[in-house]
Length: 535
Image (cartoon, rainbow, N blue to C red; front, top):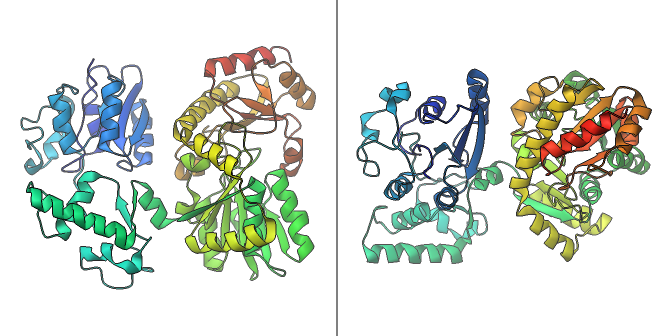
């Protein structure tokens, strides 16, 4: 069985929405869904959202790191995708192996606007199987705060003063091209001696600068956090961070809606040592502006927040804080969203903390935390907050288990998010539910901000049951598959009545928090349906 038609990740720019529709063929989209497999950051998520709104077609969008990974997945799972976006050389290979179908260009009206220089190229000489999508060059990206000298040569990638600070794109083609340029050869050289010289140059680079080979992480690492620190718990990550950043006389501005232990630590712990604390609703930017002080050193928030999934605009909070004082550190607890759904550092935050106990581990058998930020900040937190103040050092077995969990992180999060959306939609239609809190629902007060700063909406939701506390108790006590537990982010669906956090956030007695697991979503919904019948 052959996959559907492919478009090539080369050449001129074409409207992505037109390319997707035009290449989908007769079957793609007929069931209201189109399956796309693309490389890294090759399309803006907002464009997918726009396409879905305009067409009513849902896009299942997956990404890959390298052409070789894409090839293996498509080869072993034919028919999974309607559109695949490979590079030029891989298109030729896929055509030769009969993995792609001919394109009906009558479905691609914008094709006429593509320059003729980008058509009928060697990998698809008759222009039968691919549509040009993107063209690019090899270049050098650098941070001018680190590299102060003019960048005029590829030799800078071999300069020993930048040892341990060089990123290389994890692609054999691109890496070898850089080696060939360095040695004065053509990037298209087939001369064995020139290729050998390029190889030796890359070996010498390894000894000189010890480059790190990455894919899309290079952007995130250069723009945002460079280093991560593991701790023995989520609270260990939070406390180590705040002990490092604060001293007596400093001021913390924190959101009102926080994890209960975090609230207790900030309100009762820090204040014992002379740190001023104010709590505000950070979704209200005017209130934040009023509460900022000359001695404010930390802005602390969760988004989505526990337990009502409140959304805070990270970018605007960061801009507001840094405009007040560039030394203010914006700290975001990203446990609910995870890096899969949201990247606060790219939105202007300074430090991200996680309870790795939850999704990052994903199996409910580890207690751990992470702190992510610049190399300088992480070094300070490691030596001050972790070593001197808390001792919250992660054990080796816990580290091993987290590494195990991270191997399935992306695929787990995809399923968590998909299931949570379906459960949220079910609850929103249930007559015994007063209100549903899930940032992926258009009815959520923070939906517009969530769409702007989140790539997906996570696996946590909350809802208020009509009938208050007693109705909530009956619901939980009549569940058969879903487990009553205070944690979240496990493979299993977990549910709780978050009393402590509810009181702090001013939410009704009927509020219930649901961590949607990896089970068949129909089974999760059926269990809820049966329990609702008994209240």
